[in-house]
Length: 95
Image 1 (cartoon, rainbow, N blue to C red):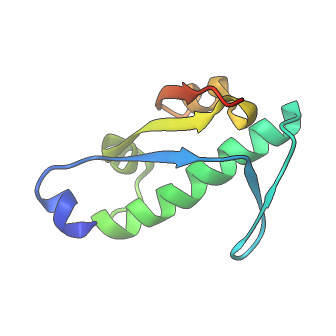
Image 2: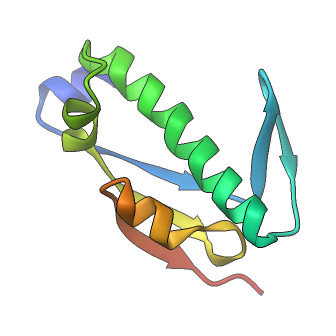
């Protein structure tokens, strides 16, 4: 990822119907309003941590400058939260 970043590439978040319940513990959920908010926030936070390590910067604005696209399944996407966090959002219809 560092090589991609150094070449000017950006990153993004893609996720499925899971929320974080612990270290390396992601569980599938049904997609209630609360789970959508939790799942979207969980995925954003985890990817932002990784991107911060890759770019060597923990400043949220610096991270969002290279991690600004989010794609998720409609069943577990809080689009309003993602957009408020500065993401360009696309969704995948499932079913």
